[in-house]
Length: 257
Length: 257
Image (cartoon, rainbow over all chains, first blue to last red; front, top):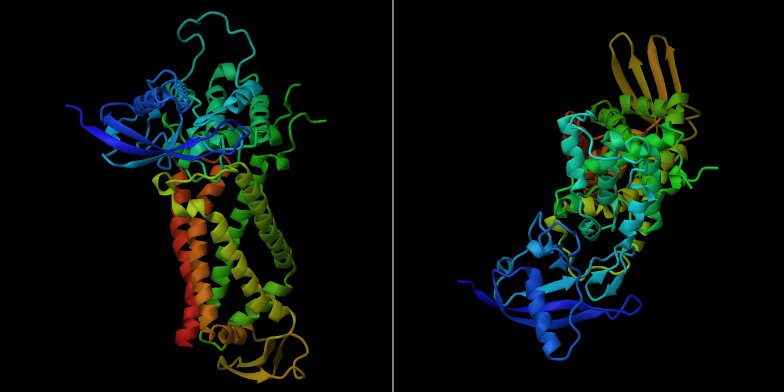
């Protein structure tokens, strides 16, 4: 039998990207502990809608931890109090009856609040568009082993590619730095043969775009790695630095215009 | 013309400056500690004062010392630039932020620890560097009988002292020098200064426990073979041995001498 609980939510409400937001206290009553955090918000929103009030805006999509849409800083932690999960994978059993839960949006200049808890993460898209692709036509699926890639390298590239672009790294970082995201995207190409052609141009273009979006700089606190739902490692940031400095100091490739 | 942004106006370029100047300052600490261990010699400052003269008058050392001053300034200025940019990257702060869940407190407070060290450096330079260079220290003469190896010393007045001199007359070595040792002894009779030194060395320890390893991550050096060695050096050499070594100096003069 599911345990039921009553909670007090302190939710950030903000009309739009121009207005100043503030915290609003909302009651969440009769919440089952086997609900996900987003299902709890659904219940709260149904209540608000029935009362004729504006429901709380929050991002979500797949609700199985693979799309990267859900966000929320819950009691001071991106994606809530557990490690290695997204908010949709967080269950209400992680909270107790009578608890007050503070819910805030990702806070970064590069992620402006659109409404309430939903932020604009298209800065990540623009970074990706600056160089996170392979220009050559790759054709159909190649035969196995037609392009030799050692297992260790393939695994590493795959681990970097598991980044879902949710932005928890930016949310967790005290400097709102996007370096874990950018480095994962640079790494997944830098490690594989298909990514070599544009390797050095990519590192420069993506770092330039990251800076232009107004993200902060890494101070190697490791908060991003700890809060990443996909366990993207800090060693990616070291690789990005290597790629960028190699491009700047030892290569003549420049950003294409 | 380059299409990509110049290295030094990128976030990674600024971090590179922090990293290189930081590592250089760390290597300086090793030399500074080893040289200053001569303060523990019970020889009325004979070896220390000779060493102080060498360090201020030997041309290659002078070149390195100017590099050192430049590194301190660059490290502080770039830290300020990066901090301001990082603050601008999160204009609205979190109402609740659980930093200890994902990172160590010293990694999040490098700026505060660095500021303590900068204040310390100003006091330190004023007390010893400035006074030494501006003839505000006492003078001393050592006479060593080269047959017996016995050294006697006596204080000189400003009029008796013209310049540093090292001569041998009748098998007696005569050294006239600025008595920085006496100045050290005098300064460390002030309990306030001793406490400032102890606090500053604690700040240095926590700054370097994060900073030394962090500098290598910024350079892109990350490898499972040598990173444990760098982490070990960062914690034990720069976080424990060096700060404790320096902290023993004021304690020695206050309590023992």
